[in-house]
Structures are given as C-alpha cells and as structure tokens.
Length: 201
Image (cartoon, rainbow, N blue to C red; front, top):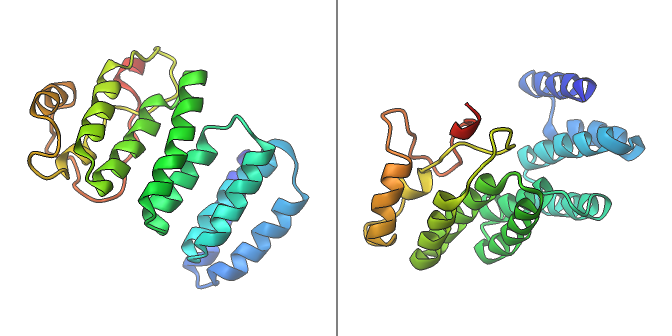
C-alpha cells in the first residue's frame, strides 16, 4: 500500500507539471489491469481519482461496478458510487440508492456508519426531503461508536446548508447540542476535512 501511495504522489506531481490527466489514467490503468489483491484495490482508488479529474464520470461508474463484483462486502465502493452520482453526475435518486447499500454494509460491519449517513444527509438535502434528513440526523445522534471505530467525527455541513424549516426543530436543536457550530466550520458543498470520532480521542 505504501508503494501505491508513492505512485499516487508521483502521478500528482506529473499532473502539476502539466501532464494530461488522460495520459496518467492510461498509465494507472495499465498497472491496475496487472495488479491483484490489495494493490489492485488501492490502484482502483487512484484510478478513480484521476478519472474524476479527467471528467470521465461514466468510466468511474464502470470501474466501481467492476470492483464491487470483486469486493462484494466493501463499504467504500458503494459510498464512492453514491458520491459520483451526487457530485459528478448530480443524479440524486441514484446517489440515494447506493448510499443505502453502503449504510447496510456499514451497520453490518460496525464501521463507517456515521460517514455513510453523512453522505445520505447531503443527498437528502439536495432532494429537499426534510423529514428523511431529520430521521438520518436522529440515527447519527443515536449511534454509539466503539473507541476503536473506523469512522468520521461529528459533522454538520449538511445542517448549516439546510434552509430554515427543512429540518424538524426538535431534531435541529438536539443536533446543535450534539455537534455545536465552530468558527472554523466551512459552508462548502463538499464534505469537510476528516476528523476522527470524538469517541476515539
């Protein structure tokens, strides 16, 4: 995995130096086709990154479909597919379908439960479905993560971007206590910078 990270850094450097994303995609794909096991999984993530940079969203979906057949219990792959539909293709109903797949796997495996629900909250916000968004916030507050949980910290970007009245008031009041607003919070459309769960600190 460290070798793949080194390759990723090298390809990013090449991109910064002016090499086209399409050229780099071809180079990564050649390595990916020959790789096996964990290296193949990690190279797929790198390939996905550069396909997004190259704006080749349909190929991102094809890659994720292929990897989900090879890693049928993986949580990240359907989450990445939901993300592709949410931010790349802006097909929010399909994004919702795939994040539900990720949540089912996350709950079964006991990891990434909060992360997956954060994405679902962002999708429901785009769809304007306030009652369902409120229900997801309730689920996030009810989660009890283990100290060793592989997950995200408490997020609130989807709360700050919600129009007044979309989230049920009682849920919003309790979520503001669960995750108070900070001066450093960003209001952008993308997920905030990763923070570990408070339970792990």
